[in-house]
Length: 240
Length: 293
Image (tube, rainbow over all chains, first blue to last red; front, side):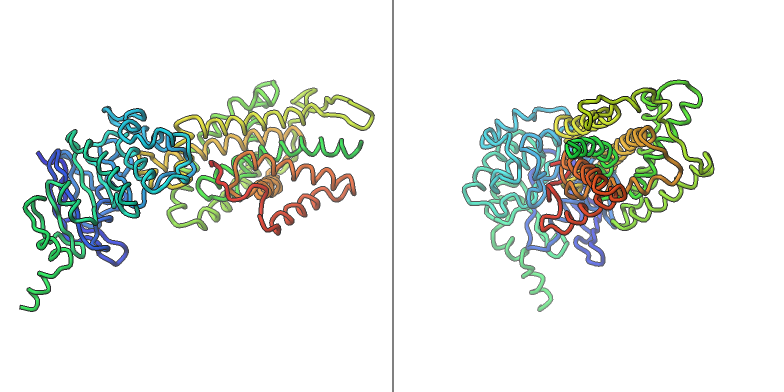
């Protein structure tokens, strides 16, 4: 049963086509890793799925209904949550307020302020601290918690490890493993290929806004992904 | 002793300016809209109270009760029908929109109520004129104490609302990052409409005190807009709400002390303090903290 369907999606930033004619189906419970160079369109694609970027063409379907024109705050209610690039916590709100503010349109489910803090123990002593004073890893944990607290069916993670110390990345992924084990559907944008392939059922490679390669995480070789990542194969085709 | 008296009168006058400035600060802090019609909205509130009093022989403090829900609704519609559309085109367009709205309100009031000068002081009864004579040179007027008390209650209530309730948290989150607010399930347009409704209703409370303390006519708005605006700036643009009340008090004290030096100076003294604050390197008493921080 597919949870998310993208049909011929085209996304623009002004005149620039960031994502072109992109189609993808994601099944319930699947973990998909998006890989691709900077500027490949991953962030724009995730923002469009969350409703923060209006498509200029194509359609987005979620759980059987078309949501292409549904505003972002309603999609939260339907079960789509995005952890945005750069965390984007509300800086002057405390960690607990950042979590509580997302509870307006939460769906019923197991995630509450308490269970998020249980899943990310480092947040326990930071509850009353302003988000602006947190370290990168702590902010990332709070940002993931803020998305989880809406009890999403589809969790979108944009650059979760960007700018984090290796140890903090370990922490974040350890917590994510629990979420994945519970059957959440996840699309994540990850620069670390090894990690992407390890955590995901399926790897989707983007190049200049197009889908250039997709396959099961354990079947694709590093070479295949690297070729797609840098567009080597296409260049060879052009050469040939 | 006259100086003590001036400072005390100034503080109470500052409560009045704080009430007028409250909604202005709220809208600026949340949406970066400078509402040039804010003074006229306060005057509109005074006229609505006047209309209620024509049909119902009571005090303005009672007559404002049916006016408040009307003002909440007007504020909500103002945001949804005018400002929301203006905001899409950048920050300059809402400024022009509220400038136009200011002229429209003034002219409609002139059409509906004639240019006659009115006051609600008489209907307010003894509250408007009573005072406590502390010493021969120090007397504390009841209306001043009441104005300041209401201002403290409204600022305190709004602060509690922003820090303790879910709609208040949503307002602070939206003020800080509207884009991300939408991503966590907040309908920012609804938040804006709620805030404008509150701002307009508080303006009507300011308008009530305006009408009791002195007189008003259809074009009274802009003068009071300037005082309210100065209170917001002295408090620190986009500063915390309490800073706005403090800004109003600084302005009030400056005006009464200016008036003590020379009866022609009160407004000038207020403007001078405002300019001094603008020229100071910090540019406001409490700088760079957003309304909602």
